[in-house]
Amino acid sequence: MEFLAKVLKGYIVTLVASNQTNQPSLIVRLAVKQIQSGFYEYQVSASGVLLYEDSGYKSISDALMAASGSDGDFLGYEVAYSGITIGTYRSVASIANAQFIAQAAVDTIASLQF
Image (cartoon, rainbow, N blue to C red; front, top):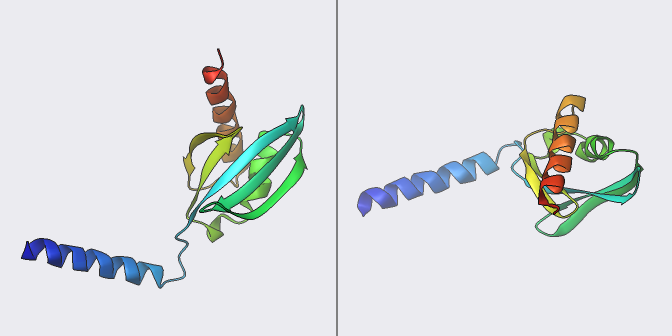
């Protein structure tokens, strides 16, 4: 029991120390939704609180890239499309990442439709 207490103390100290640096420590939810054909919007939230949103994008990947802004601000993104979580990603800002995630979103939604 004493060993476990020391391990937990060390873990807590490590957590506190890592949160006192300027390193990103937040994973936000990046939700993309199709409003109509060729028209998408995104919302970025944390713990249910809307941080920012925008609309008027021509594709899922365009919305993802616009939403990501600067990947340095967050540890990662839990990406959702049409209310379905697609996955958690470290970065969505590059064209290649955005296109990969957009395809995963389309494939996931298609696999759920009967």
